[in-house]
Figure 1: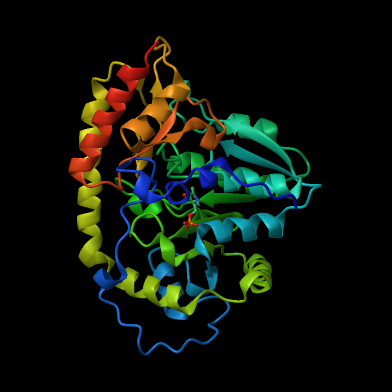
Figure 2: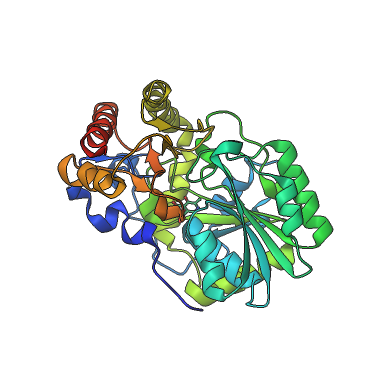
Amino acid sequence: MQYKRMPIEIESPESLGYDSIECNLAESSVRDIKYKDLGIDLNQLVLAYDNHIGKPALRKLIAQEHAGISEKDVLLTVGAAGALFIINTSLLTKEDHLIVVCPNYATNIETPRAIGCDISFIDLSFEEQYALDLEKIKSALRPNTKLISITTPHNPTGTIVEKKILENLCKLAEDQGCYLLVDETYRDIAFHNVTALAATVSHKAISVSSVSKAYGIPGIRLGWVISRDPLLQEVFLAAKEQIHICNSIIDEEIGYQTLLKKETYFPKIKEEVMANFALLKNWMQTHQYLEWIEPSGGVVCFPRFKKIVNIDIEAFYKTLLKKHRTYVGPGHWFEQSKRSFRLGFGWEQQTSFIRGLANIDKAILETLL
Ligand SMILES: Cc1ncc(COP(=O)(O)O)c(C=O)c1O
């Protein structure tokens, strides 16, 4: 394995220091909450090693949201990031080929790269509304293709793979005898009903998600892999045991108690996200310099500067952060042109979100050529 740090992590808001940012529009989750606001008491928790697969009651809670999934199909991991690492390193060797839909969350690219795999990138394009083209994936298949890797709802564009496309992708993976990795980390914060969990559609589909994006608790590092293939889950468990034996029992308990109560506080989170989204939509609709593909889920979108806009792009990001203390995620976080950037609309409360959008406008005007 050849590890290399990823720009999205090196330049992340937490690496930069939250103190240096006033309007955080780079974030891909809702605002973090305080432990005390969860109303959880962990005083009686025994700090033992936990069940290696993960707390049974929590796995049951996660499983019962999806028809045909039981707790034995759910393996808890250290965030979705931990799940992606386990899956990639369990399934792939440097002799294997995989297909990765791009742009994508950096780990979905960087871990196969660190393994030394042969990767075919299938680019989603603005001109095609960032929609997934099945034919392109089909034509990239090779005899040694071991994995197809997609994300839905998508980071950074917020687009969602349609039901029919997902079903066809599953069929493609079955015919090829390869696996389909579906990173569904933004699933719980889709705007409308999302399509069925990929793992419910096919034994070849592996679904990944976590509590990081929708509930304000990414710091507890809790995610999961769902697959209906018991042999595969056994391999993933072996990998997990070799990395960290089990999850943190504290993380599991907080995650469990939070998900148990999600019906009481999640609607408010969603309401705030949708209110920010309405403001954003309004801002984008009449924007002189930016264009976008409207997202269908998640808390991020990926606007870009219109072709006719002549701007000093480095100066734009610098001015936005240093002068206006507003942060967005430049395109290079996703190996894309810096003329596109990830804009998160779930993190800031309404007043600072509005200020952040206004600051983007100011930074644009100040750096036009
Ligand atoms: C698509 C995607 N997958 C996985 C992750 C990692 O999430 P977690 O905090 O659950 O490890 C992220 C985080 O930004 C993401 O955007």
